[in-house]
Image 1 (cartoon, rainbow, N blue to C red):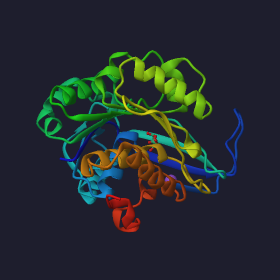
Image 2: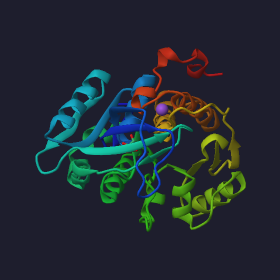
Image 3: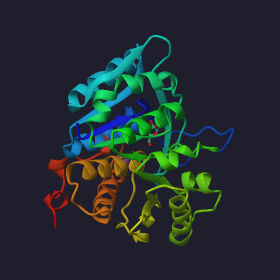
Image 4: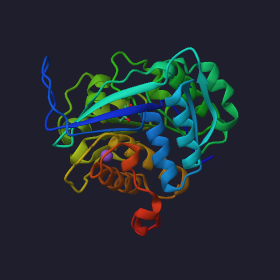
Length: 309
Ligand code: RIB
Ligand code: NA
């Protein structure tokens, strides 16, 4: 396998509205759609659409959302040998509101995702140990993600950790157990206790996380691009060409899934180039509605994104 994701599956229930409702307010929406989401699966799907051989380690409910999700993995050629359907909880769902400026607010009801256990990770050791890149987030129990990162490390498999959704009091072991930490502004604020609003504050926060033992830190800043700190890169800013956003849902996942693809399938590409290309792919996803539905496949992208120079 090129990329193995240990993480969540959600069915996205997306309402498009002129603006986000205020507390106590009802607004008329203009459109509704359901789609496949969940940060873990989104990242896996992005890597698969670019051409990576992928596998998912996840838990769904024994219900129609779960059945449909299994079918989605089959359609996309993602191995679901380690995706179980449990009758002890419902499949995860995510009601989402997207306003006209393309911004979203999301509620997740994780359900079966919260039953993905350390035992499930151990049972997937054969696939995790042979992966080129393992990716984890925080929509399953944190102990499960940490177990996956540690297992990857014990097999010298490169890992990307995306501490999303943002969580307070994250176990500091996460920082030393992953190879690449990739966090947005809010997530970085919670990890460091520092306000992160621009390139300079993101650089400071990334340096602090690197000092705490994290090999490579990427802080993403939406349309301001991202900054990187590693042993040989000190706070490099990688800008992104701004686009007119229609729906930014899952753009962060497109970035991480693409990054995982490049690390696994084009390992000699520099980290900066991986980030530039992943940002360009994430920006494309913002210009189309939906989450996985808006992620481009390799054949829809310029060939320059797949060549070495
Ligand atoms: O990052 C976007 C994702 O967050 C959505 O697909 C939703 O399911 C939530 O997990
Ligand atoms: Na989108």
